[in-house]
Image (tube, rainbow, N blue to C red; front, side, top):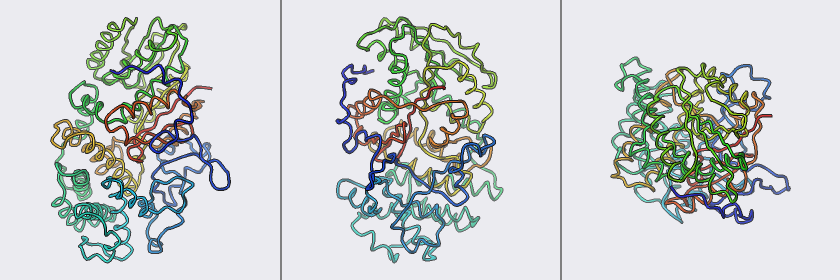
Amino acid sequence: MAPFNRHSYDVEIQEIGSFGKLPRLSQEDDTGNKSEATNRLCFPTANDQVGQQPLKAFHNLDALFLDTTPPLRSYEHQMQELANIESQYSELIKPHTNPKRTKTTSHDVVRNEVSERKLSTDAVIRLGGEKFIQSCSSSINDISIPSHPYSTSFSGFSIQETKDIELIQNLLLSAEKVSNQKFERSSKLLDWCDASSSNSGNPIQRLVHYFSKALREKIANETGRISFHGPRKNHVDDLAKRMLSANPTTVSIYQKLPFFQVGQFSGVQALVDAVVGATKVHVIDLSIKQGVQGTILMQALISQPICTIEHLKITAVGTNYKEKIEQAGDWLKSFAESINLSFSFNVAMVEDMLMFNENLLELDPEEALAVYSSYGLWGMIGQQGRLESLMKVIKNINPRVMVVSEAAVNLNSPKFVNRFIESLFYFGALFDALEDCMDREDENRSITESVYMGNGIRSIVATEGAERVIRNVHINVWRKFFARFGMKETELSMSSLYQANLVAEKICCGSSCTFDMDGNCLIIGWKGAPIQFLSAWKFS
């Protein structure tokens, strides 16, 4: 594990602002007004604008976590033929743009990308979405063919890129048919998609392969046919167990997909910033997994210019798989011994998060207390009473900081079409990253796509209600939720931001990582597509 660089603390602000690096915290428009730099996909409808209501309008957690759509952004160059198309479709082709550059079109963004390198999955999805919108507005609802009247607007792309664009178009057409319960027509479109996609092809072909499988299961569920995928809970339990195990797949993914390392190093630095100068540090980890973040924390603490740390304690919180968590603890103990750091590891195991309480944490008033959660909260969005109970305990123990990292995507919309489109972009970026960072024949890549991502897509697309276990929401929803507990989002230090930049520069494929600031929150992306957010919180 590479140690933290002590010189990272001396970074100058002006060094962080070029393309692909960390942006300024705010940007000015032509009038001189400052606006937050954001890079977010929006698919709102008139019924989804609850996000503009004040916090007091939310009377329960259900309303809060279903309010997941950001406010509608302006789109001055909306094509005339989109006038009669629902807004969630028209939002599909919006490019990621700098607020100053209001005259940029989706074609400008894609053309620039073509001139520099091959099309990313994001660009292909946007172009496929544009063809989908055009076909809908022209009442062309069947499989696209080369003589499509709009095909000339996509000249200049390779044969394979054109096929990929049409593949996305037909996948969207199929999803639209499912949403309108035209299952027979959707199935015919999926037959075409299946013939043109593969779990071993390029990123678009792989992406469509798994989305097509999920749509077929949704059709089976909607029409009352028996699902052929087996019990859903077994899939979820298996995924959780795999994530906790230091198996070759999870280790490989962590090492080769740069945004995961970027998020962990930057998040750990936020912890260190909050406990600097303390002799005893206690970190409560809500998602210990393999414990990699613990080794980063240890190195960060002993690498401080003036090392004051005498003892580090980590308490892992969990509701199952105690043996796996204890294995992570044993590994951390060995690592601490190898660097001569006094260390202890505790497990706060409860059968139900409603039973979690501060007496399980063995708190010491002399300790500097911090909470770390990397993808540790999303699983309780569907169990909001448990999430609220957990946060009450954290508020009572009043840590110096709570560092939170979650997926920067809304996969919790009650509307199937919105959920489908956003997940298509999100998983498209992940498939794109796997293509760039891992060989196509890599067994760990195949397992990641089929087991982790395939089952995630299936849950989001094919299931509804309580059966839909994969749920993520945007940072704006977490802000409203955390505000209920008197939590205030704090600014990430320049050291924390610089760690993100430093790691991205030093690891393979890190140049494709992109960074944006949403208020005080760091958005870590892949070629501009948001992947995860990192934020730090204190209790008032």
